[in-house]
Length: 468
Image 1 (tube, helix red, strand yellow):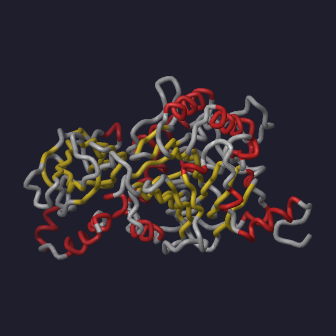
Image 2 (spheres, helix red, strand yellow):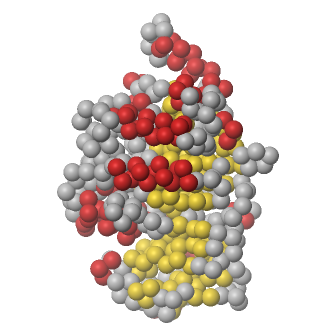
Image 3 (cartoon, helix red, strand yellow):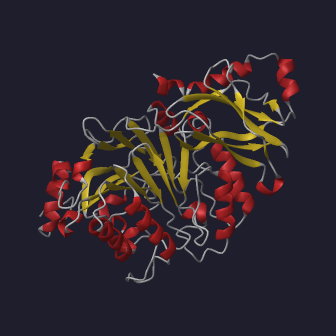
């Protein structure tokens, strides 16, 4: 019930329409927000509010645990400046864990008259409880301005939403194009309630990094990096000596490793060899160090492109197998349990697996969601991932859902959901933390029987969807 209350702000527009005409008319030209608010990274004692103001003035967050704001406090104003296109990300600190907070923004010291009602969000938990994480990729507002999938995502009441790239389709060298498309995407009506209540974290892929299939040679990557940091409210971006957008974020007993697969990427057309890299040396060393340090029950490795062999010949990890396998070997050799992957890019929903139990480790799962608002491409007919667990979903827009529970033991359900939130297959893939440890094979118990028949037919030399 409390989850559902977080999304109550959709009624604000109806109430605004009922305001006296003279009050609304007086608001025109008033200091206000042009974009946002959007909730960014949260911790047990903080949440972050991103917004873009209408002028160069101070922006502050007023927040309270009581709906009448009788216990309200206000943050120190942060200046919205032209050199950052009037965007601010304000961190509200000193809060209680796993607690609902009401908030509203003050622009130039005064309540925003265009947003007369407050919003609600929730700080992160500090102990195990059921956690729901939704994610997706590929939102092309130029072709799909309505994007009803976000109504379904909001109805699932997630604790966190992850954007896995192609969050806009800029495909440009122009700063104006990126900024305009970010603004258009932020104002999609179906998306707005989710942004205002649920924490949003993001990585990029080629279309919001540069042009299609772009890599480290992208001539405007410094510019797109600056704009990405401006328009998202992630907790970190890269390292002092390693630029990029990668970061690690903890949410309860889950660690999320958001990876940058573009800034340091060698061209995918180059021959695959041990030195070929998608992550770059600095990011890869960071990933290994952070994975080894993590004590989380589950560790999500989020990539813009797929982890399996499904996209062989494309620009996914299938073209960087030496580096992918190096990472999986590291997880095995350091006995790092609980790792699984999520990815996007391919314009279809998939549940694939890399059977690293065959190599002394454990099976690495890849839940793939694409697109949130993009045309679908049934590529799976020609594709052969190492293990396909469910038939891919190509009938509608889709999103991925990870549902974690920790009582009586840590487990997670992986599913692809369609445009109205219905499961794309009749049963989710269910994993226990105990399945994600060295020496444990789990994919055979998780695979759909029809997919197992198809896989075994291929192993005998037949075709995946044909006869022997």
